[in-house]
Length: 637
Image (cartoon, rainbow, N blue to C red; front, side, top):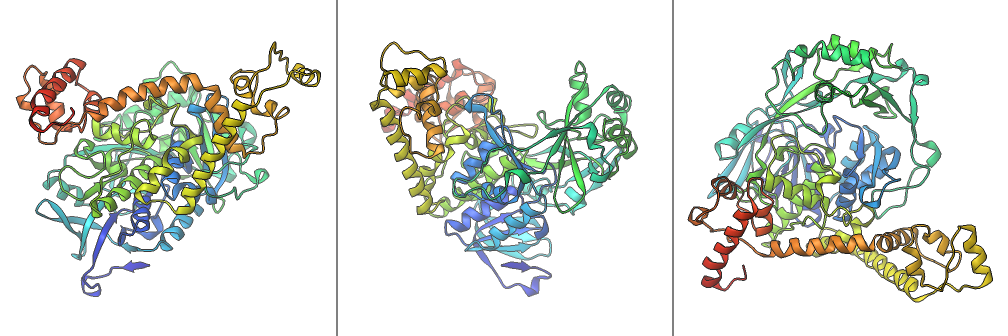
């Protein structure tokens, strides 16, 4: 249901269990899961046409990000299945590398994806959609009471989830031009961040950007290298079969910057909004503008770029990797210096966008604010960059808002359970002064957090909190049982070294001196399940086989990682009381004291991950807790 607000008199007094502000990727996941779990939910967005908008890269997934999408799906979210319905190319990244770094990436249609997401939301029970701009919030006894729209309308709520994206006091920057507005030139939110600041939220200024869009008919594709989708079916969602045809996937193209490009950029740095002193926000380190790349990596002769279609419904291509805030005339020179784009027509110029965000050290691991009770935040307002990072936070915020309503413990995913857990822990423990982007290197237990096992890791957890259906849960239970069955079969059965089998093994240059179990054979690097299937019938699904093969081949590494996890979990079990007074702890370093007071970690494990808190500080803290608290209440600290 879509509610149109024109003036205050037209709308009766309303009250919701949960209000979600913002219809981006975080807001969609938060609103959907809140409603699915039974809360009467309202999603407020400035413009319904921008729900699940993709203002930057027209893709879902990518390195590490594709794993987040599968985790969202495992938790009952929408992004994976909507991407499966909406893409025109998909491939597995890092397929030649180990399973810990493989991720799916799909080129999503910029028209179809938002339409499909909007359809999902419209058909979600307990969820209403409203067009409007939230400019203030009402707090009573340090708890959210209501939101206030720009027309003065007040709407009461028990919980509030802020997913405002890049719209808080946002400015568009092109060269020395500075224009108020959000992506696509949409109106910005003028007052909400100021009002949040009055309530005690710390506001920081961040920056991101987007590259040019190029008219398809003006590109000379004969000079570019084709990038095609994989010749194998994939889905992000665990619940649906592929709905596309392999031979109908759209092509993307690879190209590079060159010496001429670099000279144009470097000789005009003072005209860039970033280097000309017009930008106050801090940009993303791991998704920098082209001028930032050239300044930081002067030794590189060229930088890789991609041309990607944005939609099958219009004639614009996205120039991936060429984000800039240069003036339009310089952008023309830059684009025309690229091979294949000598006569390119720019349909939309690149720009930088500055916006307000909150300090993520002011949010709890549940994504609830430490400042005001029952306010949750997710996405770029927390300092992250990327659709997937936003959606991952959105589903956790939505789940925890409902759990708070039900007076249940929040869902806090650990670093060994999900990339989403790593993401949130990094934000609330370390904070960020630049847009945070998820990387595989951030996850120390990434061998456990693979793309292929997200459902096995998270669906039991999702079932316990009530965010998936019984059918989804039973499907995962069945899958686990089949994996166990296949593993037991490989351990039980041995290869017979008769002449026929020896001859088959010889084809693969394999010699055995004695009979071994197929489990032991599979540990060898030169043997896989396809070979074993020649000797032992394996009537199991390919997904089960993949799980078993990874588990057996990487058994030693997995066991070592799990031992590391055990040590980490022991530190997580040593909880820190909320009422601790860090000023009473003697001999702790002043920086550590300051950081501990700011973050207020929940456990010794979290405290140890805070930047500026050293092992000696942790030892002093642990001794203090054991001395002061265990004697008082018997807690095991």
